[in-house]
Image (cartoon, rainbow, N blue to C red):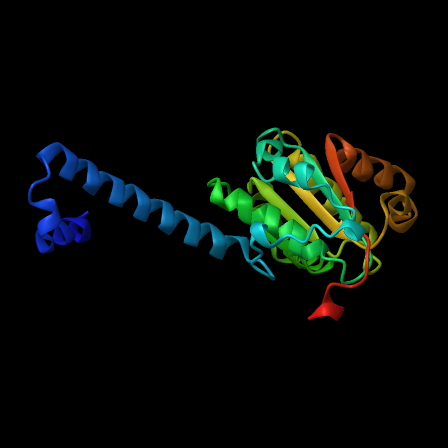
Length: 224
């Protein structure tokens, strides 16, 4: 507000403006600056691998993306309902970009986002069991309005990791939304998890109220 007041003092354009309008201007500038600071903070906390602009989503026909459906999800109503999004497709098909674009839209709505790669975060949770920080780490992941799990199914995971994944997803039921991105099609997840009861429970928690995208087409990286 001090900066906005200095702007008013330094510009003759404000001299004839009524007091109430000048005060409204100060309040509007303060609100804008607070929103900008909040967005910067949420972006830092999200720790995106790539910062994706939703306006740059590629809707070429061969990719299999429905423009209206994506536009609806960019309004972030699904996050407030604690729905999930599952994005699958071959390497380079733009899974990370699309998921991160949904994350950027969430931040624009003032929602907290956390981006992690699946295997590294599960390895981090395994270490947290040893040093006693697992509750703190799990809480940080559960508390985000939107959790983005990238590279799901890219490497084998231990029994402990599967249990941690289930515990994490269980904690997020009706507390937040989760985006899962990976090359494996959903029908392959049960075999990948290779633990019938855990697989059933994990898949059940992800598939409930889920929106699914199966990206197609040639690698986006080949075009760069």
